[in-house]
Amino acid sequence: MMIFLSSSLRLCRFTKCCNNILTTSYSARPVIKEESLQEPPWITVSSSSKTKLKFSPEDLIPPAQLIPKKLDASIENAKNSEGWNKLALESSKIHKHCLALSKIRLTSLVVITTMGGYALAPGAFDPQTFITCALGTGLVSATANSINQFFEVPFDAQMSRTKNRVLVRGHVTPAHAVAFAAISGITGLSILYFTVNGLTAALGAANLVLYTMIYTPMKRVSILNTWVGSIVGAIPPLMGWAGCAGDLLAPGAWVMSGMLYAWQFPHFNALSWNLRPDYSRAGYRMMAVTNPGLCRRTALRYTGVLMGLSYLSPMLDVTNWWFAAASTPLNAYFLYLGELFLAI
Image: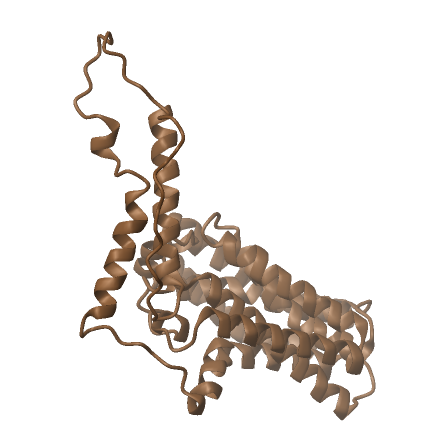
């Protein structure tokens, strides 16, 4: 037991050193002089022990005080070699790096769903509020995506899909990413609060916390991350609705949000299916990796939920029956694709 604890402690120290190298900009840090350990050894082997150890713990586990020295020495050697390239932040590319940190295509989709929620809400259309609601939501989304990339640098480096992100490549430092996230987040929430309303700002803040503090770490813990992530994707249309109507009391807001929530399961499960090697290599617990059968069944189930919501909306007087009739062929084809996915 003591050998296990000693191994765990030294492994944590080694991992911390490696993480510092991965998440630090391309500049060498000075050598830190390590002092010898003062505490007594955690285990002692009695000379009268009947059980002979084939290897002593010191043979199996490198001394903790030697690990940082070896890493520092490797950094110094790399610094002095011809292959060491110090990357400077190019001011002419700052806007491109900021767009990359914000995952501009994903942020654009978030803004579009917010604008759709605003347009469908039963309230007076105010162009100024419409624009500021979309702008504030976009900035909050950029904040969430930047923080997400900040946390996932070591894992993004192991995935083919994400290995060229700006933080992984060292085009910007973690400090730049945090500064960008702070500025865009404060600005976005301020715009939502002062130019739209408090409810929309509260939804934006809640979604920011949900995405960065719950969904992001949960990806490496449980397959429930997909359900949490779907909630994150279903909130932006509620923000648009709240920005126009000032409340979320109408059933239309929840039917619309529910449709987007249900749609994300067949969408993401099919997307993640082709990325199973990447997710597995990075240690992400996705249904497609840990439970492929559940992944396919869940996609089909929520395709059926999406069709059911299309029929529920006229029953709640959110739409008329023409909407249900027009959506039936599309939903039927969607179900057919879900059946094909299930049969894989």
